[in-house]
Length: 236
Image 1: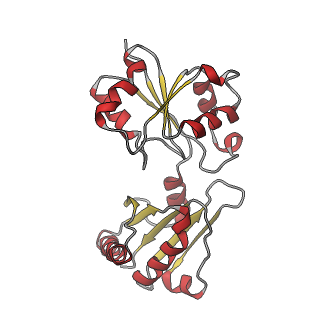
Image 2 (image 1 turned 90 degrees about the vertical axis):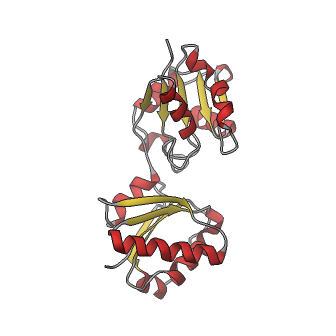
Image 3 (image 1 turned 135 degrees about the vertical axis):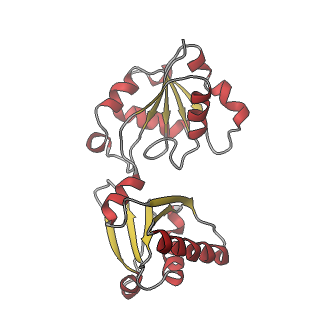
């Protein structure tokens, strides 16, 4: 009999394990010996902070990241085929969402392995909840292009789509490019488009603000190098 693949959310902000994770997370991790993760060092640190495994050296952490190929998945998930349960951990928030762990979930479904998603924090849903933008119709676009000309074209295209469909557009950025992203958005979006910037969600210094582009231009925010989710909804 195959083991089960548990999809285990991690914290969005460091040091928030006790305040944002439901009890099912440490309870599940406590009974698992095999884990898939993007980075073994940070995964071990996360499990260590939970304090549920006195002997971390007995645990097995296999790396599944953006460079993992489809051909490698079977070997990584061999414990499942051997009847062992496994936990899939993301670097931040929910696994398999903006996360390479989706490959493991796909494999599990293809091989009749039970997938068990556990509740936990998602920066995307937290940002959407707090934005006041359309939560009935929305799309997540991951990371936008880095090239300045290309990103401006993509932002304008997404704004047209937002206007036509009344659709909230969500995306994320590497923290060190936050300020550049804000500049691109303020240069490319229309003045009445509502832009939400949700920074450092669940952390003590969490900051969420939603204003029109016209209002943002009066006081351009300096984001700093923190995790940020960007959302906008075009005026119709």
